[in-house]
Amino acid sequence: MKGLEGIIDMHIHSAPDFRQRKMDDFELMEAAVRLGARAVVIKSHLVCTADRATLVNMVRREKYPESSFEMFGGIALNRSLGGINPWAVDAALKLGAKVVWMPTNTSANHFRKEEKEGGIEVLKDGRITEDLKTVFALIKEYDAVLATGHISPYECFRITEAARDAGVKKIVITHPEFHIVGMSLEDQVRIVKDYGVMLERVYAQPIGGGKYKNNLSDNVEAIHTVGSSHIIVSTDSGQMQNPPWYESIAEYINYLRDAGIEEDEIEQMTRINPAKMLGIEE
Image 1 (tube, rainbow, N blue to C red):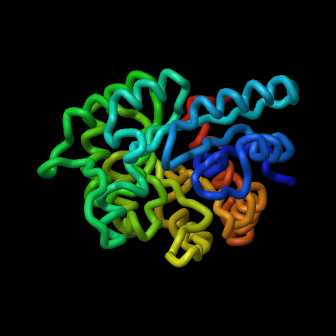
Image 2: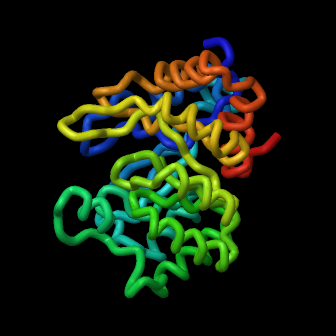
């Protein structure tokens, strides 16, 4: 598809997964090579995806040696991986993980929003735990990305401040517009101003009952308000209810163009900013 060459999407859900997904890892690779994409990051709420990405890249190099596409993986610190588990993070980073997400669908904040008890707390008595300090040290050592997952706005600020103090350079606020996170646009502006983070603005978000809300108009407002230098365009695609990844990313970028977002801003959000986060700048 025209105009998608070199794009990078840092948030895609692919199969294998407990939940049915629109595409598997290899189908995603094939689509990315066809588009001329530079890279994607596959995300699971359940397992580390770095090893899966490594296998896909081996196949890509054999099958499409002329392509420069790379798939990357990460780890979300959910219950299935022991929560805030430095040992799991260490193993993931050694396997090549590029992103460490704070807890997502088993975070205490996610549970509270769904009126459930339990979930993984990222703060204890308002403070960072020793395990989380170790996780930050590992992220710093490997120059990986800290992504905030499904924690609350208050927790995002506390985690970001502590991570910056620990020397973490790459921080992404995961879909702040998602109602589970619920970060106001004013707070998004403030966290960028105070800590220089990236905001990940995604294609669509679940609103309950298996339904999704398209975020594109809200994303345009955020781009105008925050500025493209601190926004990453990701799809968070893979759900059966949404279009396949290659359609979602095309619709997203075309929408931005039609809304008057300049080409250099689109370049910043889809190529330059995510490349810096992944350490693959040309």
